[in-house]
Image 1 (tube, helix red, strand yellow):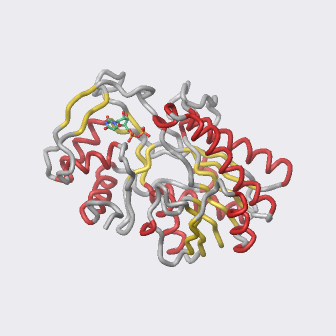
Image 2 (cartoon, helix red, strand yellow; image 1 turned 30 degrees about the vertical axis):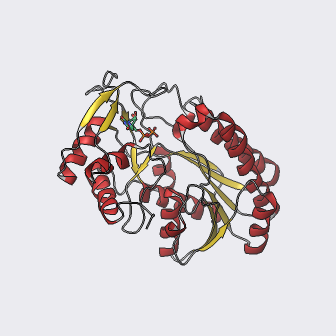
Length: 327
Ligand code: UDP
């Protein structure tokens, strides 16, 4: 396959590129490097520095490289930020994604994978969350992904471009070469590991009075390699003639904030001081996605479901790269 990966210098994108290249596929990365890192891009991928806001730039890339498929990761991705700066999401994520989709349709791209989000389901009636759950985006971030899902729906209906939307929660873990490096970091696992590295004094638990067994929020932590494999499998299926799909991806079970901290203590041998602070706005008690449908249709199942293994792999990367991709 020849695949264009937007956001291929970011966390999930760069690891998907790594796996594509290991599988013998050819990859073009399009990334503005605002949040991504040049060193995260596999050396065998072609890196084109550019912004999806520049419609002519992305169109030129698709015209020149003629990818079979597009994987779209490039995006603003923070729920909290999206509440503070809604138009980064409702406008920029939508316009940038639409520029890409329009060029993909124009140049006959056969398969489009959208890295979507389980933040489409803010008010689920059943847990784990299945694909037929009512869509209630939980934030401007979730809404922006839902709007792109709708754009793709129409591109299939009007022009026959097949697509797959993958919705998931908390990506985590690492490979030997690539891991999670955001600036500023807001995610639980890398923050906890920064405490273990001596870069932070403590971790603050955002509330311990939730309706969960230990009072802290339960989330669906899913290994980034499992996510990468799901994107690749979905692409292969589309390019083999499969029809458009939307799948939820989950790890099979959730873990609480306290479980994450305890596991990180066991893995790192560091006491990782923790204090309980106020709740973070918008955090529900429990979020877990069901992957029954993608398992049934494509045979996808997580290879790294254990929290200990996820944290071990992340810890190994953070120890080797204590400042992430910064030299
Ligand atoms: N969390 C926390 N302290 C932190 C960061 C996160 O208690 O410093 C909690 C957060 O409230 C949520 C879980 O950890 O319940 C995962 O949060 P994260 O920001 O990693 O991912 P999100 O669920 O927002 O995508």
